Image (cartoon, rainbow over all chains, first blue to last red; front, side, top):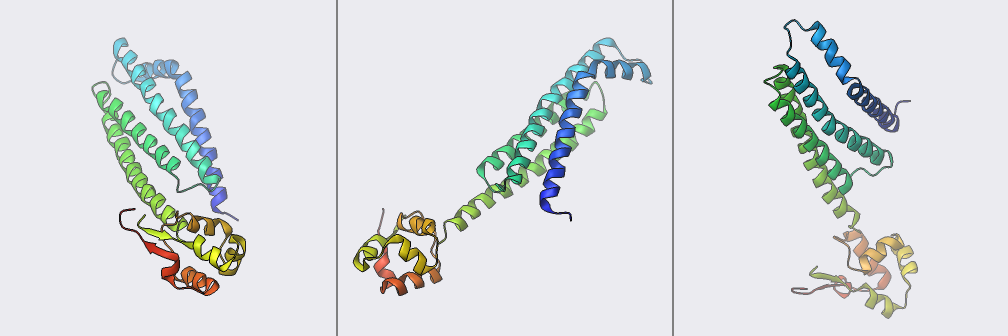
Length: 150
Length: 69
């Protein structure tokens, strides 16, 4: 039977897969960009390809940080430590990682227009996470109140 | 906290140990310790009722209001 524990386990596996994908993409980024330049409809300058690579590598940093935090968060949930200050901190870090990636992509709009849409989408995810963090923060206070009601 | 729990005093008067009191009230010794050490944020009426019944006292005997403490 499907249960919350299995759901957390599945999320953990998915997170690990995404971490591996980010590492693999970062390792293969130069060749992927070469491929992109090869098949691009409009001829791409070498300097803008270089910037393209730098931007994507810059995005890998917050992405990896967010994924590691997500992995730690899921580990805590698995250990039945849900409403804790540590989880609030992790959610805050993930939210800021989203905003950082969004900012990097916002600066990269001049190289690739799609980055603008991605920037808005990631900022929106960051905002949602921030609200979730605020909810969990209040839940931590309520839980403490409840724990100390005898 | 302006409300102080004087459970120690009543327990000494009634010569009852923390373990016995926790068992008779129906709470865990850990929770009784939280109550005794003034770490509790709130107390349920049901718990207070049990404390008063077991210690044969009034709520005012175990709870005290101290201004500015």
